[in-house]
Length: 136
View 1 (cartoon, one colour):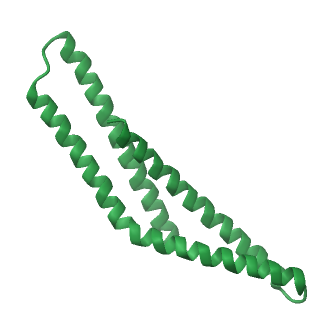
View 2 (cartoon, rainbow, N blue to C red; view 1 turned 180 degrees about the horizontal axis):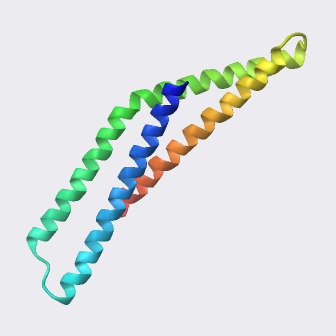
View 3 (spheres, rainbow, N blue to C red; view 1 turned 90 degrees about the horizontal axis):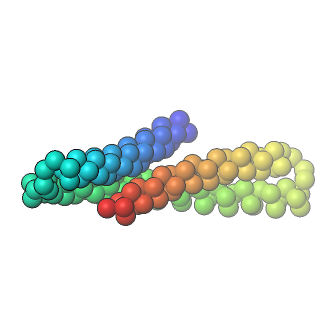
């Protein structure tokens, strides 16, 4: 569980870093455009450098997606299994209330909500990166 949590934190930090990098590059380009329009003209070298920065960031996004895809697929599969187990335990606990089934179902329910929140957080972070990429 702790390894999984550390992996989730790593993913979220990677997504935040990439989103912030896109935001900073966009701000830098806008700032440079404002200053060049007042003092000098826009040069081909400036545009090529901006393009190179954007391409490097897009490559980082692609590589991050490739690194995380298999782990996220298994995390999603684990969540589906956990949700199914929770539903089974709840139905079984509602029909047969003898034993610790209800307590186990509550525990599985809490774990399911935890997985859902973690999955939702990563999805929101990935959406932010997509929006930042779309801003270029």
